[in-house]
Picture 1 (cartoon, rainbow, N blue to C red):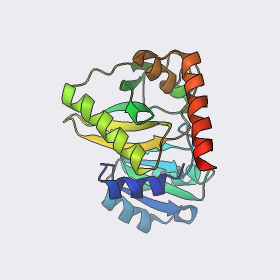
Picture 2 (cartoon, rainbow, N blue to C red):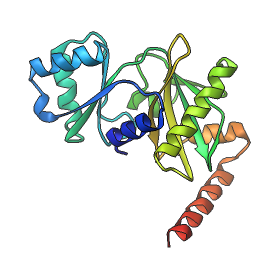
Picture 3 (cartoon, helix red, strand yellow):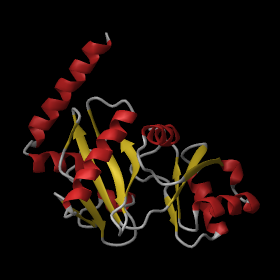
Picture 4 (cartoon, rainbow, N blue to C red):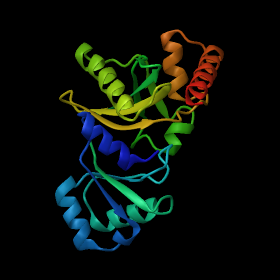
Length: 219
């Protein structure tokens, strides 16, 4: 759940990820400092708490307005002391679920407007999901490969879901590894598993078995 540590591990493993910086809540209102961050990351910036999920506390700043950036940091600071600022990557949002070092079918996420925030994640009909994603073959395969590398870099052995962005030119960036993927009727991990041929009950049983095996290995 530590996005800064994940970013450091991605860099060490050669996994492409958007440029980033970490600030704390004291940065709110320090416009000179925020201007220096804007010069480093660009005018389009994603602001997120360093250790949350479900898009909680996230703001996307598109025009680099420093007052908006300060307010976004203030919001994220309600959920964590440190805040991750990340260059916004334009393009398509995709995700790859992984079970036991095997990448499941890629899913493209298409919210009806804006970005994939909390409302779009959990409101039926607000987001279209395409599984398997309609990508060029080499982009599809590379997104799965990057996801496996990202999961391995974070030391994940059982299951996870990796979130990525694909630019219009086909370049892929890893945003983060989700170690507690959702399991609602709208969630992506069960959707990918079903596309792969694993029904929900079998998926639950599989994850329980993996948990038992991991527990035994750790004893």
